[in-house]
Image 1 (cartoon, helix red, strand yellow):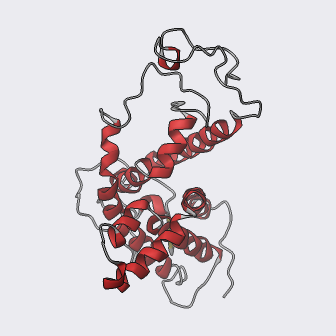
Image 2 (image 1 turned 120 degrees about the vertical axis):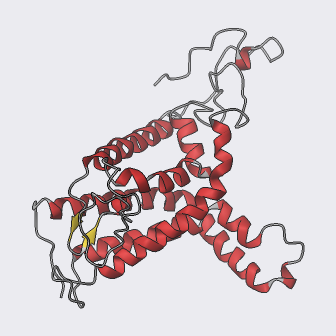
Length: 273
């Protein structure tokens, strides 16, 4: 990544004729490029891993654990999951990985998330790469043109993310069974799925759209005490939205990896009882 000492081409962006003639691209002396570089590396690593697992179409069920990438399973070619969310609504015509039918919803929710917009705008598009560092683009159009105008669908993806979180919670409840589907089991996989479900809920409910839905456009909080209390709770979570975004991204990848390793026989699931 460039250090920022070289000026952008004259006549573009901040080098336009109507802007102040400052030769330096910025006056920062710290390693401002480190944060966007790490962000880009982290997001790129997850994209590569999740793409591999989404198209793998294997290793996503190890009774009683199911990968969050494949739940609910909506195609007929799904591995049978006894008692699990295996809904064959797409029939036999769908021949690709069933993960591709469900990942579009949590992926759309994260891609349009306000924090993730900031993360990949800076990490990949350099718009801008950091505070007080000018972006290299000729002009700024915001989210008024395709494809970025699709970011306005974030609220609708939030509605879709709620049932996904509920299904992952259901999967966690089913994880308290053993491989013979008898209740009373708890293994390391149960803990992994439980932590993931909690983080997914925390990230989803910390969303800016959630905060607006429960308490937005109210003129008098005193007349709506329940909504005010929900708005306050969502606000506390929203203050940790960035941390929850990364924690839930890591946990969902870890949960999928754990199920994959158990399903492919790399190791057996440790039992607590």
